[in-house]
Image 1 (spheres, rainbow, N blue to C red):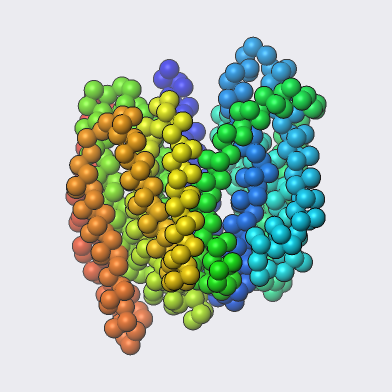
Image 2 (cartoon, rainbow, N blue to C red):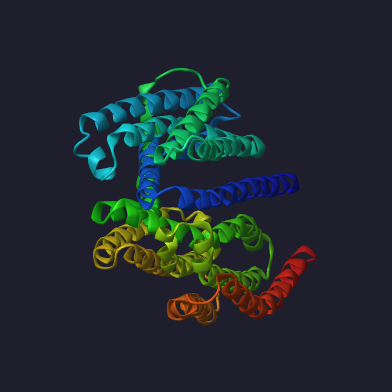
Length: 484
């Protein structure tokens, strides 16, 4: 048992390290995009990326969600049947992707022209379709590696994909003066590379076959997962597609740049959650003081997210002046709203683990509800306020979704969170994050670096002691846990 827990912790650490490394490296593409590319070109990349991720999800039909289930079902008793399941799945994914691409080409003016509105078919949509065809098999293979707990292999493969894509993007844009097509071409080449690596890797995992009875079985398990997965996409990326359809590609770029800075909070919360989730399950199963510990740690975590949100919101205007063209400078107005949205989302992470205590049936209902609300809010708010409306929609959706999931999580497994204190922390963080809306116009006449120094001094003075005090309490809780 201890060996299994140790392996789980080691794998979680590997995934967390590579995930944060990838996100951190990806963040450094932002200065390249905002100094070299016009807003319309970056808008093409942002919109195409959102559409690619949607269609890859759809083409994959959530088959990767069935991989682990069937692996643990048959790995000991019937390995040959497991290989037939994987083989049938691989063949169907490839066939479905081919016919879906052909269908999209035949119905181009109704589907592709709608999804890629304002974007030229050649080369942008063509390159996007190449990535869309190649990636489903790669994600299926990744799921096989994760099911077999081959964390290093899965993470290295993922890092190869991401590293090649970033490296080629820099070469094409900075070396060959490509524009949006450079980023999309880099994505297509990286997708092709991992597609080939996936085919090679799957040779020992599959038996090449196509068994209709097996396909029916896999579809019966996988298709119910598809609405949940697509709804998750709709809650996080549909705003790019809607901004382009309702407004323009340039507006998409402004929103995306401001969002990337605000999502620093999300990067932190994803890293924290990768360590928190296993700890949460360990507390629930093994510690008599679990609820008390969970309540205390959650409050400290939310404080951390709120402090990060305030810091990125205050520094975003000056950061954009340093790393971007003047056309992007207004993007900072999105950052406080997005940062606050991900503080709330970070709180959601701390209690959402209860849905995996054999209560996953709630997830589809909750994510579909969040997706519908997000789409409706985006439609009306983008019409009214442009890219700022998309940010407001994101914040309101996170509030709605977190409140809804909190209600159900408490019914499933009650934890006596100090909700008033947590809401107060989020509220104070939101107010402080929003402060630049009021004082930033008065700072425009002052020297940039003087403003940066003053802001850093204020943020450092008030946040360092605050974080230190709460983190020391957080460490005491973990020490009590380890020493019980």
